[in-house]
Length: 220
Image (tube, rainbow, N blue to C red; front, top):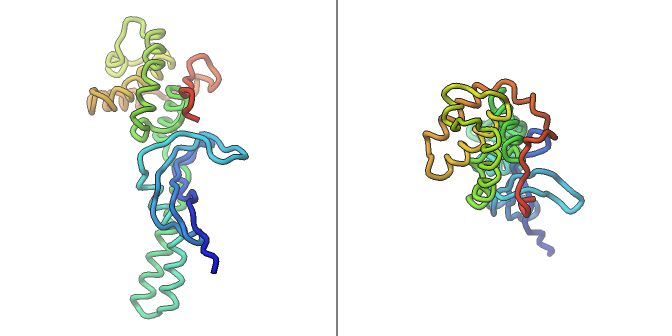
């Protein structure tokens, strides 16, 4: 008897602009058993996914299980019959269907944040998901870009009083988000979110414009 096993990616979530999170699972006969690790995909090639590692995504893990095991559990519940069986079938089918709504990033604020992330970091991945190594690699470039557009202000000034232009808003947002992963904590995160809520014109910066960040070498 041939046993098919290995690792495989499941659980695509939060897709926007061709980028998304997914999780690699150990599988047997293509049925996900347990998660090995999550990654943020920035592009796909003939050789597979390209991107960077992120912390294990609970949302992606749940989606990976629900989309494969959910229909199986639903069918099993129907064949079992009875009130309990049909309840299991309904719950499993409902969770599986609901998990597919997570595939695309939803909500205007989330979409705006995704765009700001792309402009600030060269990836739509939220900094809260990034590895510590990637945060540290991005910090020097983001600090340098902020120095170019600061105009005597601090990122906190931009959060309190507003930005002079979209480039300044993006740079301040990016620096505050990265600082929040370090010693800045909640205060920096709150200030970054204030800039996010003020920044309704981030699309004014073209994705190929001079202020777009790039991922560090080796990240993709």
